[in-house]
Image: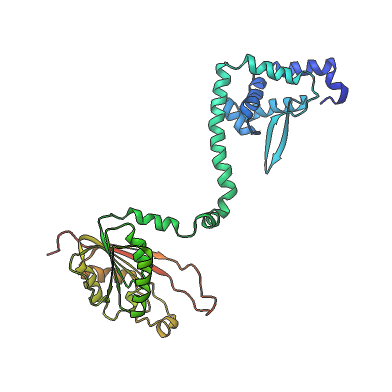
Length: 333
């Protein structure tokens, strides 16, 4: 392009006018000029104009050669925007005249409408293209690791009664209590019951009934709950069939049981140090036991452990499964 005093020569002025004497190049410039647009990609311009990229690229080169636009690279893409060169003869005046004369042009308004839609999509694509590799950690830093799972509790029926079997320190009971009518927190350990009681008091939840009891003899009336949850408790129980019968007894017709437990493993630490009676369960065998207890439509899903081993002990961590069964509305004959 001309430089220095050549920018104000007759030849430079004629070259500028000749470059602008093309409807496609006028449309390209108007896309870039209108509304403080960001720098545009070739594909975005061609989509807005409904023209092949090869055609648009040819016009962009002409505009670049004349100094009317400038380009910069972003990754593998080239971005184009109006020239920042203030020395080019008559450029400011021509820009202002074009905006004024073409403000109501139907073709240009259609171009601008299409470009607006394209840039809306670009914003979404650009944001997530940049953040996708770190999206989980970004969200975790902002909102914590469990917010979406806690939010899903809101899908529970607020009229339900729920039994939290093996409630431990009542962390799950408190989370459930904010979304259902009543929670029965069942726990056999006196030490756990003491800690659970303090947590429940601190939570302010008045719809939790803390009860001493075990899976072998749940202190809840028959058909009293809509959902019974046994989370990491069945591997401590000697009589699995009897425990499943008890769960079926307290669940009302149409209600469900949700069991979270260990998949089969050979890690002796859990038997020797954690008091596990069972070294995990085979889900398909467990489904048959649920059916024998009176539940139907059982489904299970594997839950891989978050870590392969505990760093402080070197003990491997077994994977979990979650299983859901439903008590039929009409008992099978």
